[in-house]
Image 1 (cartoon, rainbow, N blue to C red):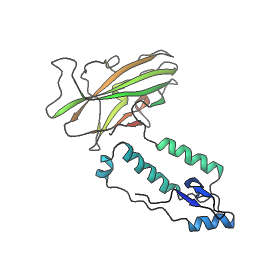
Image 2: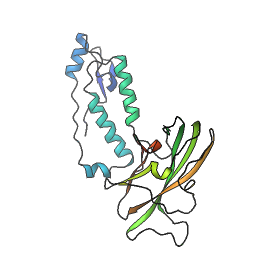
Image 3: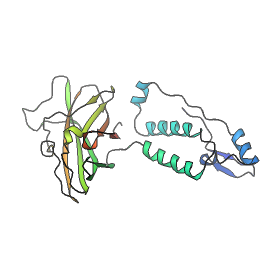
Image 4: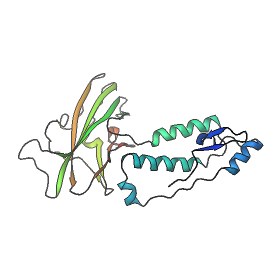
Length: 229
């Protein structure tokens, strides 16, 4: 973990925020502050311990990791500050209720919101049951068409679940109670409208849900929500 001071004193006795630790080292005072500030130390957790972190505890760990790496910035120009800020935003873990704007690969843009995760989920009827040793998990999404209407988007292809075992699970095609699977996975929503549907997964008993992922158009980089805790 990181050990560092949240505030330190400048040469004139003023209190400095951590963000001031690496101001441009172009004056004697700034060099003194650079040299006198205790360096941060960080120790990566083993993978199993990292996967077990949940909620605020994981947020603190990730913030500490980012803070440690930001110590490498010695010349803090306005551009570097902006890059560092955007990096913090991009590396922040999205939570349930957060959304991402993604493309369908055909020019349309839509917003995908993870509304909730149902764990365990019940099958749509008495005949719909998970395999032995497994349970249903439902990821409920809201899709809003922002620019155009999504084309050839299949929620069953776009969504994935990552377990605490590090394995990625693809969609199961069984229906769960209370929600439709869009139109058998197909997303059909006109510009400005929204649609809610669920994607079902089968997850082994004893494996926790760590992340839900979505890949617009079924390819490229995935967006993800941290659902631990």
